[in-house]
Every structure is written in C-alpha cells, then in structure tokens.
Length: 433
Ligand SMILES: [Fe+2]
Image (cartoon, rainbow, N blue to C red; front, side, top):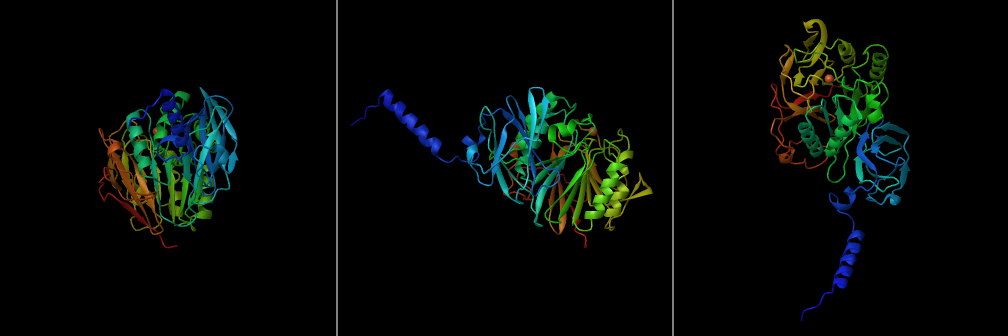
C-alpha cells in the first residue's frame, strides 16, 4: 500500500532531518567547522618568541567591535561558549575596510593541538586549529620561502602545496607584496587562507621583512611582530634556535649586538642554529647589488657556527657549500666543507615573484637555477635535511598528494623536488657539542 505524503508532512520531515543533522557531531573537513558567520576573516597565526607556550592569533575584523578568541584543547567546533578559555585583542590596526586584530595566547602547553574560533557581534568564525612547538627533541619539518608578489597563481599553488606538507611552521622571508598597501595585503591574506587545510589546521607563520615592505611598520601592522622585526626562538628542547633578522635596517649596531649576545647565550646549548632574512649576502643574479649590509652578519654566523641561512630577494634558487667568510675568497667567502663552524646559505626566494636568471654562481655555489619554489626542511637530533620544492610553469598543487602525517619528510606523489647538483637532499649533520 502506498503511503500518502502531504506537503506538510514532507516539510515536517525535512525540519526534523535538519534538526537531527545539526545535533550530529560535525565531520572535519566539511560543513560546520568551515562555516563563518562572523565579520572576522583573513586568518593568520604568528610565532614570535615563545612558540612552545605562545601564539598570536590575527585576523581582519571587517566591521563591528573586535571579536574575542575562544580556545582550548578540546574541539568544540563552532560552539564558542564551550571553549575553556577566551582571549581579547591586545592590538588593533585600522586598515581600509576594517581592522587588523591581534590576540596573544599565552600559557599554552608544548606540542599540543589547540582549537579556536573568533566570536564577534555578527557571529562565530570558522573553527581553526594549530599545534604548539615541541619542547622535547623530536623530529619536525618547516618551510622557508619568500618573494610572493606579482604572480598570484603561482603564489596560490605554492600555498596549497605548503598546506599539504603539514609542516610545524612556515618561515616567510619578505617581499610578500609589491607595495604594502591595504589592498595588496588583503589579496595576499586571501591567498594565505589556502595554507589552511580543509580540517581547519592553520600553520604558524614566522615573518621576515623585505625591501618591498618599505614602510618601517609594514610588517608589524599585519603580523604584530616587534617593530624592528628581529627576534628568535628555540624549539624541540635544545634542537633548533631560529633567528629572524632584518636586512632592511642596519645589520650592525643594535641588531648585531643582540645577535651576538643571543648566540653567545644559546649556540653552545642547541644542536642547530638557523637564520632567515630577506637580502642575500651574495646574490646569484648579476643585476642585484652585493649585500654589503647582511654580509656583516657572516663573521657572527661563523663565530657561533650558525648552520643554515635562508635568503630571498633575487627570485631564483641556490644552495652553497658550507662557507667561511674570508676577504681573500670568492666574493668574501671560501668553501670550508669540514669546518664545523661554516654556514650553508640557501634560498633567494621565488614564491610567485617574477623569475630572474641565476647567472651569478660562485666557485662555492653548489647549484642555482631560476624556478619558483621553497625550501622544505626536516630537523632531527642527528641531522638537518633540506629539499627544495620546485614549481614549474603549468604545474598544479592539485596533483600533489598530502603527506601521510604531520612533520613527515617523505616526498609525496606529485611533488617536484629540485634535483640539485650535489644531491636533491642537502644534509647537515649535528655537531658534537
Ligand atoms: Fe626584495
């Protein structure tokens, strides 16, 4: 016998199904956690000085009063009232179409997953999650790249690839935008949302200043870094101390004094030290001027045995042999392969900026080339390993499989790795302390 459905009964059934549906736990990657009925957008999460216990939540508040961050270790999806903690903003910066908002979370537990939403007058943001840095010496991966102005398609694809590699953090070595206008930042942050995985994982960014961020406060207004944009942190217990330096202000003076003191204090304790900054000491593009200012750090790096330096600005890729500064060497350096104090220099930045021919290799250059990409690094107690992700014209992030787990360093299917001279994987072994 056929059962007769009236419009009324169908409507009631639909309403019942909807009610039932909303009471079900949300499945990560779809539906509820990704919705956003707040006026908060353009999400970013910064690591500055204490990433084992702190993270700075940032966003654009399009209208109304700044929202409040609701967070905790339990995933309450978008039910903001169920989160155990709240944090109000400590800083807002007026921009065209709203305000950059920053709320610093403190007292976090190391190596822990946190969930958060932003609740404002309009509603609740999408639910995001992040991991704090470990305080034990366990393996992790990170990405360093720079120069993402001009070519949005490449920038977007590399952002999507970064998300698929599930690193602990992304260090970004400047020249995000062509001009640091609100409009260009707005577009850049729209694209940055592509580094957020479908399950809402947001990767902490460690920001450096480039010459295109040519207003003194350009970086701090977007990321709430210290005004002078140099700082350092240690992660993995004593596994890595990472320095963010600012090549757009004098390398000498206060900055070098701080760097010397900090390395004096920490370099003997930690297994690895690395530094990132925008302008290379010795560009591998002939049209670029020599980096007289950043070269002033080379003797400091050597004195304290800094293992790896990430450079940007030239819009090509390079990696060097371990180098020792020497005024009689080729452009101020000699290769010092077995010298435990020597530094490997890598990068030169192209995350979507116009490529330039790598036509200025040195006697101590391992390899260089003109292509887009970024460095992908694995840090373990015994070694620091680096692969360079290569993104050629016509490639697509769509073809790249996500890595199986967070901090995996296994090259996933579809990912192109630079087959550099000297080997695709650059290895720096831990020194005996
Ligand atoms: Fe630059």
